[in-house]
Every structure is written in structure tokens, then in C-alpha cells.
Length: 309
Image (tube, rainbow, N blue to C red; front, side):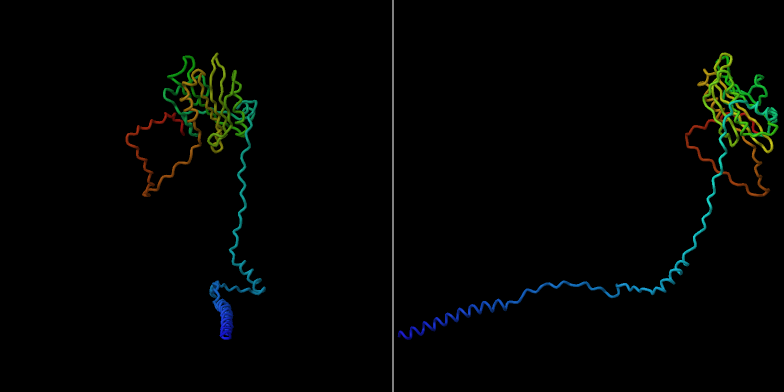
């Protein structure tokens, strides 16, 4: 019995040892037999063969021959026109410090021939005549072409007036040199004080205009005086305008005197209008703009003294 018991213990021990070995082997074999986790595969971009541009590199000789061909294909540049220099401006007229216009013409041997408005046709002269002013004969203005006087206003001693004198200038002279003397006569008036002056052209003609005050018969007078030298063909004319009022009537007569000064015009008559041939259709005149209903009628323009040629 004792022998049998020992045999079972050995056997049992052997079996336990084998079981332990088997357990170890079983764990080991299970771990080694477990499949590995597969890694995701990164897809690679597929480039289609058709999208790849085919670049052909020409031979150096081909490149050299293609350059002049491309250059010849370009349009020829348009020739650059030379810049046209601007027309030179006439030199600025420097006002003379001495010698009136009359004295200048006398020194040049130029004769001043007074003109009469009744039969004068060499120039178009427009002299606005304000309401309340009249065309009058004035013996105090020698060689007067036209004299206007205010018959409504005034201070009882002096009436505002406008005087036009026209001379035909017979002789040779430089109009720009002559007009530089346009201020001198006014500057010689008693107690003269200049308020404005200009030698700018008047309608494209040499001209002088000066404004200021002076004393006469114990009165202070305000005046605007313009001289214009007009050339008509071979002839020259001196047209002078003087608009004068007493200093205490300057404000009251302002509308009238400004209308005369600003509306005064001198121009050379243009060619006669071309008449259409008989039977030719006349050009249509532009239609007048319709007047808004209820709009007041436009006031008539100031009366003009008919001195047009």
C-alpha cells in the first residue's frame, strides 16, 4: 500500500508538472498565434498620363530661328508725331507813365478824324441805354459820337452820363504800343485816385480800362474809362467810352452804370449771311423750349442804342 501511494504521488506530481508546462506552453502558443493588427494603407495619388503636359525643348538652333520670326510677327510701332509747341503769347503790355493817347498819336504823325454815328458803318458799337436815360446832344463833349444822360436820378448839380467818342486813325503806328498810353489822360485829372485798371484785350482788340475818382467843380466824381483800338482791313479806329457819376450817386446809379459798362460792345462786322439758292430747302430752326405753365414772362432786355453798322 505504501508503495502504491508513493507511485500515485509521483504520478500525480508528474501530472501536475506536465500540467504546469502545458499551461505555460498554452499561454505562449496563444500569444504567438494571435494575428497582428493590420496597418492602414496610405493611398498614393494617381496622376493620369493625359494631364501631364508634354514639354518639348527645342534645339538651340530652333530657338534662335524662332526669335526673329516672333519679332517679325509684332505690329510695327506707329511713328510718334513731334510735339507742337504752343503758340507764343504776346508780350505783356507795360503801361506808359507819360504821354496821353493824343500826345502819342501826335508824336507818330497820326491824324485823329472824328466819326459821326449817323453814317458810321465801319464797326458795330452797342451802347445799352438804361431805363430813365436818354440820348442827348452835349456841346460840352467835343467830337461826341453819342452821349447818354440820366434824366431821372442825379443830385440836382450833376447827372450821371455815358460818352462815346470814335476817331479814325490815319497813319502808321503800333496799336499795342498806343494802348499802353490809355491810362495817362485819366491819371492827369485833378485829385485822381485809381480803384481798378487793366490792359487786357477787349473782344480780341487792344484795350485799356481804368476806374477811379477825381475832383471837378468842388465835386468828387466816379468814372470808368475804356479805350479800344479796332482794326478793320487797312483802317484803325479809336473807340472811347467814359461813364461818370457823382460819388454820392454811385449806389443809386449802380445798376444803370454797370449795365452800360458791362454791356458795351465793339466788334468788326462779319460777312453777310449766305442766302440759300432758289428752290433749296431752308434749314429748320431749333424749336423754342416750352415755357412752364404759370411762369412769369421774361422781362424785355434793356433798350440798346442803335449804333450797329
